[in-house]
Length: 459
Image (tube, rainbow, N blue to C red; front, side, top):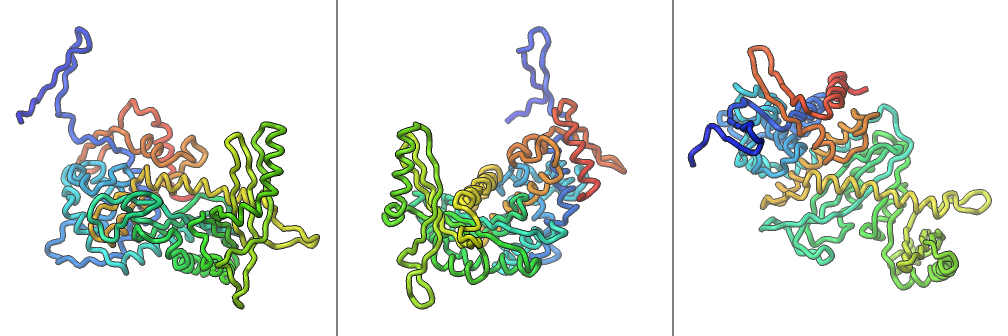
């Protein structure tokens, strides 16, 4: 194809519009230098890279493991989730600067085949070490031990579209997929941090492996903070006897959704009937909370007898009909007067706060495309899931440096659009690399404020 050096357009009246590919080293992602500065402050990618073993022949190595890891994570953070994107981004001047290379004289970054070999070389032991870094990083973010930590466990579908190992058809989601287990931690009402991202085959129960993950995470939290109170939340996928029993034995409180069944509905019928009557009188949505003592057939004590547990009932009736919900909980302590220390409505509100975590999962899946697990090997796809979780950690850190600004609670997609996607011309001289950012960039003041906060370091 013949390349035209000058492009002319005639839609501006008498003034001709002329274009030429001679602008120099230009990138659309100036904000990647903010991500790189943030990463250097906390050493996150360096610690992840320290978990990996380089098995390559030293004389043939062109890209260090740390460089390859940063390249992949920074690309994901900037919205380039596919490994194939590396072929067009390897010479991007800002990405090269972010990864520690000179934009003009520095060697181009790794290509897609190189990064694919990198992803497929990681072992299970190395993945476990990387998973430990996520927990350590969360712990080190607090100078004092928090009073309470809420752990949210959730399974989510990760559709597959090829011949990936251990991909199976899942009847609930109606597709071939993986079923990752995600664990987020919130200390004293602070931000939600990803503590674990475990890839699982697509045909497992939603609660499969939850106890093993809880054992690892809770042990690490208790090692650092022996007195911290831990509460676990999960939907009905976590409603398994082994989960309740482990939490009770480990001193971990729980709030777990229960799927409706005929027995629960029969027990809740008096509450629903009262709500229906109130709805008929007022025409408004009616929502009341109640307590039940309930034992499913699979809930047994040490002697094999039925084990009663507290179940919070939401009896809701609206114009759309009945909407009963059930939550089983270990939070059943009594006051001196014989009443529950925490009311049913307070406990249900605490459970319903899971909605915020579901938004975090949507960020991970939609804004950072964590479902791009298209490698053949299962372990390579687990590695990819951790790379996307690492990019999410960097964005969570970025939100902390945006405290007091209009983007303090913005979602990742908004943060990326406003902070990363900034046009810039990059010029390398003998002593400096100049970033000439677009003069028309509308959030220049905010970008400068964030840059200065990052240069000052954590406050």
